[in-house]
Length: 454
Image (tube, rainbow, N blue to C red):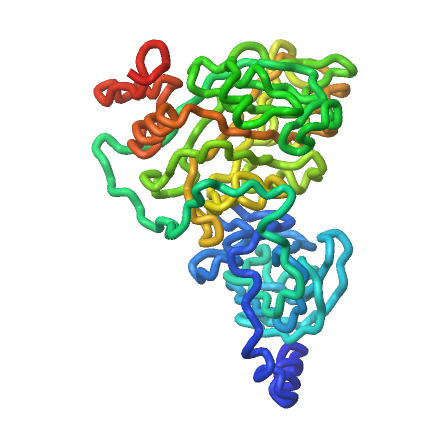
């Protein structure tokens, strides 16, 4: 009898299954991370979405892990793993209070795949499958990773750090529809903002350190020209902008790039895309006024950055691409580029949360999770810095290249943003800052020659 079968038989004899009938599925729709992903169609979130047609797939090496954040401390009673053909022969189920220090609550070296229901006894906020030996020559592949138990503490939904939406957006069901084919084909659903540096070398961050000037690492600011530690939505609306579209008074900022001790600023207007992050681009709505969030993390590791759901192509220069840290050398005269995408699903309830992230989520294979059902534009930073040659001294004020992150504090003029979203994203166009698609000129533009509403 296998270790899994023996544990299951013991559970039945001792009445564990009857006791577990009241336990709750805690993992579904919760944030998930993995040590690697096989390809873009097998993300970590595919194993916690309740859909047996999606999956998480890893790289073809050992060890690998899949981690889910339950959102609060829980007593764990059972874990159910539904494997694809590529399964784990040897793995552990581990729990953690902080996502860093792990305790084993189950271990096997003789698993045979299929569907495994594992009774466990443990507690923690984080639960992961830690695979040490693959059962095939492929990676690890899980259709579903389900954690059952009882939450013993949950994060608050109000109090310091929570900024409620007024009014909240409720009753939204994420769209699973696929837009019909069009003629000519719809290949893009986006518009871009072109914004230059508005303030540089300022140690302020009004989202992470509000009201505390000088408390953060150095940032490079774009868009709004007044952004500082005391920034509010009202102050942004009263300010000016370095964006070519005067209605975009949003504050955008990122860590300053340094070459040695010298700050390097992007030259000219940079591209900030507003795209659809969901398959049904017709369901995307404008940002609510005052929405703010953080994308990425200054404390990210290289693996965190490489496997981040917002990572696009890493760092590029010349012919080099898909670097997850700043390259050691870039051809003289080239520029350092990075592209990084933001989450595009909103919970509809908060304009900000204490970690500046929990009110936002990434789509799972093109559909917003039920916990964050409101599809909003997906911001994508496309930044370029004039630095090349020997890059040994090039870093961000937050650290290595993989510490790259950015903040968004929305202060877009409401009617202007709504017109661009409706015309370009919902309309399936590839628009410039006027809302004009060069390849479909017959569709017109959302804004006039002055980049304003007509």
